[in-house]
Image (tube, rainbow, N blue to C red):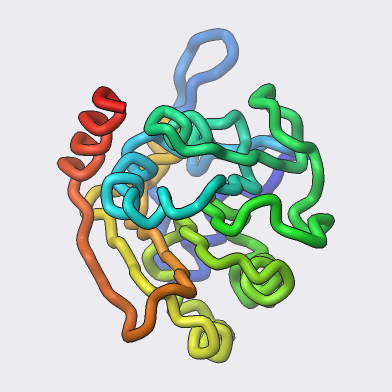
Length: 225
C-alpha cells in the first residue's frame, strides 16, 4: 500500500503543490500532483549536505573513535564519512546492502558509538506523531555525547517542541543556502539545516550558513585523505 503523497503538507500550510514530472517504469514521463512513496521506500541523502557538514565539523568528529549512522539506508552518508577516514557503525530497520546492523533504533540499550550523524525519521522527531521520541531516546536514553541531524529548517518551530528544544538546545545549527531535492525527480526542494547537539559545548546556539563551496572543500579533504 502506498503512503500518502506530499499534497497533505501543502494543504496544512495553505499552499498549493505544483505538478511534478514522474518517470514511469516504461520510460515514459507524466505530470502528477505529487510523488508517492512506496512502503519501505526511502530517499538517499545527496552527497553535498553530508560533505558540507564534514567540512564544518571534521575537527570535532575526529575526537570520536567511531560515528553511528542509525538510519543508514543504502549507506550514502556512511560512504561519505568513511571516505575521509572516519570509522562508522551503521544500522537500520531495512537491509539495503550497506552492511548495516538490522535493528530498530529503539532496541539499542547502549549506543554503539558516542556520536551520531544521520538524516533521521522526521515523523518521530516532531511532536505531533512521535512526541520527539527519537530525539529523546538519543539524548536522554542513550546519552550520546554528540549528534548531528539533517532536518528541515523549520523543524524547531513545529508545535509542541518548545519544551524539548528548551531542555536540549543545539550547540550549532548549519543552514544550507541551497535547497535539496531528495527524490531526484523534481519534487519541491526545501531549505534544510544540520542541527548539532554537542555536550562539550557550553554557551548559546551558534548559527552558521553553509554554501556549496563547503561541500567542495570536503571533496578536497577527501582527495587528500
